[in-house]
Image 1 (tube, rainbow, N blue to C red):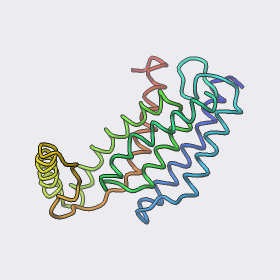
Image 2: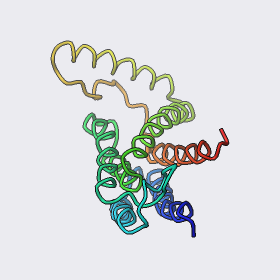
Image 3: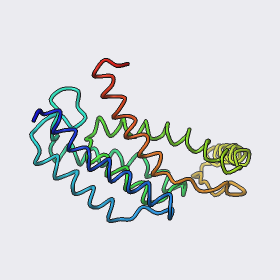
Length: 196
Protein backbone atom coordinates (compact mmCIF):
# COMPACT_ATOMS: atom_id res chain seq x y z
CA UNK A 1 0.00 0.00 0.00
CA UNK A 2 1.39 3.38 -1.01
CA UNK A 3 1.51 6.34 1.43
CA UNK A 4 -1.02 8.17 -0.78
CA UNK A 5 -3.48 5.26 -0.55
CA UNK A 6 -3.03 5.01 3.24
CA UNK A 7 -3.68 8.74 3.58
CA UNK A 8 -6.86 8.52 1.50
CA UNK A 9 -8.07 5.60 3.61
CA UNK A 10 -7.38 7.69 6.73
CA UNK A 11 -9.61 10.48 5.35
CA UNK A 12 -12.50 8.12 4.61
CA UNK A 13 -13.77 8.04 8.24
CA UNK A 14 -13.80 11.85 8.29
CA UNK A 15 -15.89 11.91 5.10
CA UNK A 16 -18.33 9.36 6.53
CA UNK A 17 -18.64 11.30 9.79
CA UNK A 18 -19.28 14.50 7.84
CA UNK A 19 -22.06 12.78 5.89
CA UNK A 20 -23.57 11.46 9.15
CA UNK A 21 -23.46 14.98 10.59
CA UNK A 22 -25.17 16.35 7.47
CA UNK A 23 -27.94 13.75 7.75
CA UNK A 24 -28.58 14.62 11.41
CA UNK A 25 -28.36 18.38 10.88
CA UNK A 26 -30.82 18.27 7.98
CA UNK A 27 -33.25 16.05 9.93
CA UNK A 28 -33.09 17.60 13.39
CA UNK A 29 -31.00 20.81 13.11
CA UNK A 30 -28.55 19.24 15.56
CA UNK A 31 -25.17 17.58 15.23
CA UNK A 32 -24.95 14.88 17.89
CA UNK A 33 -21.90 15.04 20.15
CA UNK A 34 -20.99 11.35 19.62
CA UNK A 35 -20.35 12.00 15.92
CA UNK A 36 -18.01 14.87 16.71
CA UNK A 37 -16.28 13.29 19.71
CA UNK A 38 -15.66 9.95 17.98
CA UNK A 39 -14.36 11.85 14.97
CA UNK A 40 -12.09 14.03 17.10
CA UNK A 41 -10.60 11.00 18.82
CA UNK A 42 -10.15 9.15 15.55
CA UNK A 43 -8.52 12.19 13.92
CA UNK A 44 -6.00 12.43 16.74
CA UNK A 45 -5.28 8.69 16.75
CA UNK A 46 -4.80 8.47 13.00
CA UNK A 47 -2.42 11.43 13.00
CA UNK A 48 -0.37 9.80 15.76
CA UNK A 49 -0.32 6.17 14.61
CA UNK A 50 -0.41 6.32 10.81
CA UNK A 51 2.96 6.44 9.01
CA UNK A 52 4.52 9.86 9.52
CA UNK A 53 4.02 12.50 6.88
CA UNK A 54 2.91 16.09 6.33
CA UNK A 55 -0.81 15.36 6.72
CA UNK A 56 -3.31 13.12 5.02
CA UNK A 57 -4.08 15.69 2.31
CA UNK A 58 -0.44 16.74 1.84
CA UNK A 59 0.80 17.13 -1.71
CA UNK A 60 4.15 15.62 -0.68
CA UNK A 61 4.83 12.95 1.93
CA UNK A 62 1.21 12.11 2.83
CA UNK A 63 0.69 10.56 6.25
CA UNK A 64 0.02 11.30 9.89
CA UNK A 65 1.03 14.82 10.87
CA UNK A 66 1.53 14.07 14.58
CA UNK A 67 -0.46 15.08 17.62
CA UNK A 68 0.70 18.72 17.77
CA UNK A 69 -0.24 19.42 14.14
CA UNK A 70 -3.57 17.68 14.63
CA UNK A 71 -4.32 19.80 17.71
CA UNK A 72 -3.26 22.94 15.86
CA UNK A 73 -5.63 22.03 13.01
CA UNK A 74 -8.44 21.45 15.48
CA UNK A 75 -7.74 24.83 17.09
CA UNK A 76 -7.91 26.54 13.68
CA UNK A 77 -11.27 24.90 12.92
CA UNK A 78 -12.58 25.86 16.35
CA UNK A 79 -11.30 29.43 16.24
CA UNK A 80 -12.65 30.06 12.74
CA UNK A 81 -16.28 29.33 13.64
CA UNK A 82 -16.32 30.26 17.32
CA UNK A 83 -17.01 33.96 16.66
CA UNK A 84 -20.12 32.98 14.66
CA UNK A 85 -21.32 30.90 17.61
CA UNK A 86 -20.67 33.78 20.01
CA UNK A 87 -22.69 36.05 17.72
CA UNK A 88 -25.46 33.41 17.77
CA UNK A 89 -25.18 32.90 14.01
CA UNK A 90 -24.59 29.14 14.27
CA UNK A 91 -24.82 26.31 16.76
CA UNK A 92 -22.09 24.79 18.90
CA UNK A 93 -22.31 21.55 16.90
CA UNK A 94 -21.13 23.36 13.77
CA UNK A 95 -18.11 24.75 15.62
CA UNK A 96 -17.22 21.34 17.04
CA UNK A 97 -17.62 19.70 13.62
CA UNK A 98 -15.17 22.15 12.03
CA UNK A 99 -12.73 21.49 14.88
CA UNK A 100 -13.08 17.75 14.20
CA UNK A 101 -12.19 18.35 10.54
CA UNK A 102 -9.12 20.30 11.66
CA UNK A 103 -8.00 17.40 13.86
CA UNK A 104 -7.97 15.15 10.80
CA UNK A 105 -6.35 17.64 8.41
CA UNK A 106 -3.76 19.56 10.43
CA UNK A 107 -3.23 23.33 10.35
CA UNK A 108 -2.60 24.12 6.68
CA UNK A 109 -5.40 22.02 5.27
CA UNK A 110 -7.74 22.98 8.13
CA UNK A 111 -7.34 26.58 7.05
CA UNK A 112 -8.02 25.68 3.41
CA UNK A 113 -11.07 23.62 4.36
CA UNK A 114 -12.36 26.44 6.57
CA UNK A 115 -12.07 29.01 3.79
CA UNK A 116 -13.80 26.63 1.38
CA UNK A 117 -16.51 26.07 4.01
CA UNK A 118 -17.15 29.82 4.27
CA UNK A 119 -17.45 30.01 0.48
CA UNK A 120 -19.75 26.99 0.32
CA UNK A 121 -21.78 28.34 3.26
CA UNK A 122 -22.39 31.65 1.54
CA UNK A 123 -23.47 30.09 -1.74
CA UNK A 124 -25.57 27.36 -0.11
CA UNK A 125 -27.23 29.79 2.33
CA UNK A 126 -28.35 32.04 -0.52
CA UNK A 127 -29.59 29.02 -2.47
CA UNK A 128 -31.44 27.71 0.59
CA UNK A 129 -33.01 31.12 1.26
CA UNK A 130 -34.16 31.30 -2.36
CA UNK A 131 -35.56 27.75 -2.23
CA UNK A 132 -37.65 28.37 0.90
CA UNK A 133 -38.77 31.78 -0.35
CA UNK A 134 -36.95 34.05 2.12
CA UNK A 135 -34.09 35.37 -0.02
CA UNK A 136 -35.38 38.95 0.04
CA UNK A 137 -35.83 38.86 3.83
CA UNK A 138 -32.36 37.31 4.22
CA UNK A 139 -30.73 40.08 2.19
CA UNK A 140 -32.67 42.71 4.18
CA UNK A 141 -31.47 41.10 7.42
CA UNK A 142 -27.87 41.17 6.19
CA UNK A 143 -28.21 44.87 5.43
CA UNK A 144 -29.75 45.62 8.86
CA UNK A 145 -27.10 43.59 10.70
CA UNK A 146 -24.22 45.22 8.80
CA UNK A 147 -25.56 48.74 9.35
CA UNK A 148 -26.36 48.22 13.04
CA UNK A 149 -23.02 46.47 13.54
CA UNK A 150 -21.20 49.45 12.04
CA UNK A 151 -23.13 51.81 14.33
CA UNK A 152 -22.33 49.66 17.39
CA UNK A 153 -18.63 49.48 16.52
CA UNK A 154 -18.53 53.25 15.97
CA UNK A 155 -20.16 53.67 19.38
CA UNK A 156 -17.58 51.42 21.05
CA UNK A 157 -19.79 48.38 21.70
CA UNK A 158 -19.73 44.82 20.38
CA UNK A 159 -22.11 43.99 17.50
CA UNK A 160 -24.49 41.02 17.71
CA UNK A 161 -26.76 39.33 15.22
CA UNK A 162 -29.82 39.95 17.38
CA UNK A 163 -30.51 43.14 15.45
CA UNK A 164 -32.11 41.30 12.53
CA UNK A 165 -35.83 42.02 12.79
CA UNK A 166 -37.26 38.69 11.61
CA UNK A 167 -35.44 35.41 11.21
CA UNK A 168 -35.21 34.18 7.65
CA UNK A 169 -34.91 30.49 8.52
CA UNK A 170 -32.25 28.10 9.73
CA UNK A 171 -29.72 26.60 7.35
CA UNK A 172 -28.11 23.28 8.37
CA UNK A 173 -24.48 24.45 8.30
CA UNK A 174 -23.09 20.89 8.42
CA UNK A 175 -23.95 20.82 4.71
CA UNK A 176 -21.57 23.73 4.12
CA UNK A 177 -18.84 22.18 6.28
CA UNK A 178 -19.06 18.89 4.38
CA UNK A 179 -19.28 20.55 0.96
CA UNK A 180 -16.43 22.95 1.72
CA UNK A 181 -14.14 20.34 3.25
CA UNK A 182 -14.72 17.62 0.66
CA UNK A 183 -14.69 20.17 -2.16
CA UNK A 184 -11.38 21.56 -0.92
CA UNK A 185 -9.85 18.07 -0.72
CA UNK A 186 -11.13 17.20 -4.21
CA UNK A 187 -9.79 20.49 -5.60
CA UNK A 188 -6.41 19.90 -3.94
CA UNK A 189 -6.19 16.35 -5.29
CA UNK A 190 -7.12 17.54 -8.80
CA UNK A 191 -4.64 20.43 -8.65
CA UNK A 192 -1.87 18.11 -7.48
CA UNK A 193 -2.65 15.70 -10.30
CA UNK A 194 -2.63 18.47 -12.86
CA UNK A 195 -6.34 18.19 -13.73
CA UNK A 196 -6.98 21.91 -13.28
